[in-house]
Length: 400
Ligand SMILES: Cc1ncc(COP(=O)(O)O)c(C=O)c1O
Image 1 (cartoon, rainbow, N blue to C red):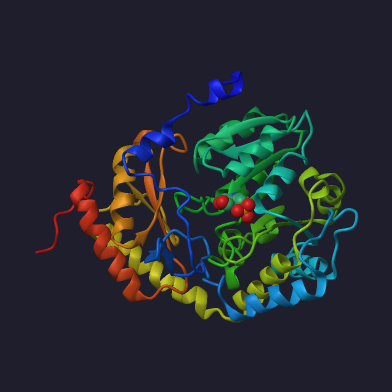
Image 2: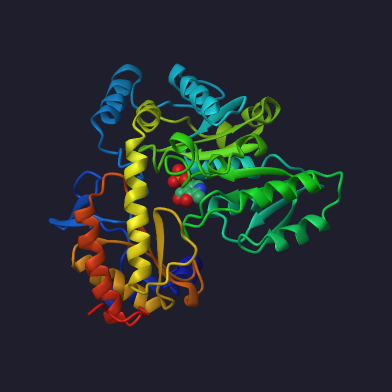
């Protein structure tokens, strides 16, 4: 064994979970991505997807991807900057910028690359990036690459944000970056207060709408729009990998900011551009999101029902008010056990364990899609309640 292998062979946490028969990762799906998937030849109900509008299998979305592949080919063989810009990239950028009421937008190949390439690039050494401790990993990677001073504030805690703003020099740029909907917890950023503080301290705001797009706001414009605050937020980020049933992401903002990113953002310039199929699929999904509001309405009917049922069964679900519902287990091993037990009963859920969160904060992430039926939801909730009761994590006795 060489030195590298020797060092890394000490990392055996996954093997230990595998040995216990509780390994819940890299489960191989053999079917299309829908509310029901096939794994190991068995049908499993999917409550771990981010396709909130359930469009990954929509005929129009698939047809758009196929037509774009036929017309433009399978890959872009270069970056947007040089040989990788198509007319459909520009059309989608225009649609997205208009949708969120900004001058302009640019598309990256993944949402992760958006945050990485935007947050790392906008502010200088003398400036500040203020970030919520529960921000997505891609935002954290972005500010790690920045030379700016980074100031973390406690999750959705506006006193903590203000304390950090007070530390900043008034004449330097201060960029506040938050998830609109927090990806694991499902709670919504306190944007009215963030906007008020940003005004008071002369800060700028970037909101990651990965989980707000297609879920909240007018026609799915996102968490920011649900508060009527799109004009107050400088930068709106979104991904195509969730409601828009594809892969890719965008950032929308004012002309000077987008112009700067277009010519300086390294994950945009030094990475091949979004494939024709992914771009066309996202564009078709966007059109369906805008023209079929009944999808979002159904998603919310399911969400309100599920939130009520989880609370009634005595399940700890934190501050969520969205289709992302964290089931707090607060114990690593139990979290794996509940996930595996439910998987064996035909329910797919995602465990969130340490080191992603502290052992005392482990949870199982339950998420809804507009294509779920109430029958599927009832079936899952029944199994979940029984299993959580067996695990001893419910604090309400069963109804007689
Ligand atoms: C809040 C948030 N931002 C950004 C991303 C990255 O998006 P993508 O999967 O499109 O790379 C994710 C995805 O997990 C996310 O949850």
